[in-house]
Image (cartoon, rainbow, N blue to C red):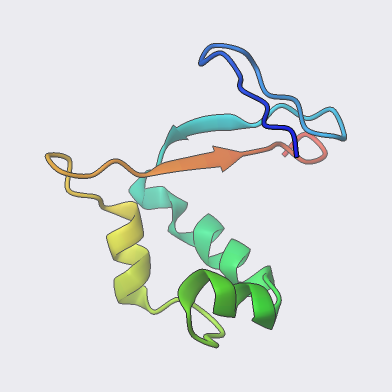
Length: 84
């Protein structure tokens, strides 16, 4: 296995040529994160959350998108698909 180490300022390019943007998570990311989790397969949701959940509870979504600024940092990587 090869481990690729990127310089922190080097742009990452995905296989299809898209460049993901990494940024701090924001409260208005709730719909995006909710949609992402709902499109995961059951097996992926079980591996990620250690439970066979269909959707994240509102409490979890709020916790993910409102980190304690003194103790936590939450990041999200986004990719534009078809210009959106």
